[in-house]
Image (cartoon, rainbow, N blue to C red):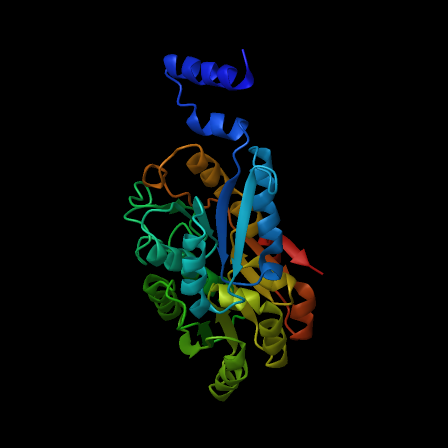
Length: 332
């Protein structure tokens, strides 16, 4: 029996026993799959998370350059580039699009209604229209979501207030060009601000060209602390934001630990590098025949508080002992 006949016999045999072997057989037969990776920030900004994703793929048997080709598209922190980049991936006939941000997932959704999309970290995928529900996504999109719900954003403000008890004016920085920004997040922050007797100052920045004017506006309003929303644009330019916050003597809360590693004061969020690897499981299932509509969206269950003590010292800030005891990591 030649190799072709042996393979056919194996395929028929598996079918006879009720096994759905098509994807597994194709993979064994040497088929190379092509997926797209559509990222809002730069590769450098998400390298740690990307390596976690690739590592998990390898554990599942998918090796880049062997049985998997990844078409990378980087928006370099500019969400307005995403539609064109998503269209490129569609033209490349990729079999799955991985979208590690709500803005990227929305761009992919607008580009295709048939290619499966695995989203990573949108803040509220139901509210922004990515999926019908977390349990039953429907359509061609599934994956993971950044939060267990918008209440995490109110929690960030509460922790920031605990770190700076005297603060009564807090600036919140958002990107109006990011279509994935959930209104529910702002409602939760505003509700928390009322309960904490904090007056919020809303400041916008579409990109690094707006950062100086944004911080100047905070200074004019005498903001005493600063909350940065979790948009990928701000992640891509985290070092610059950290520098401006220290220069303006603004204690700041972020949505990614990477911002703290870059010099920001603190973050309360899911560990992105740990959680992003979960997206590889979705890719694996889809390449083996699963439909996105049948795969529930996964939510994080563990969050970490990370504090940069070096930045606190530069700000002349003493972090309360109660907060330090709750911190998962204190960067020296």
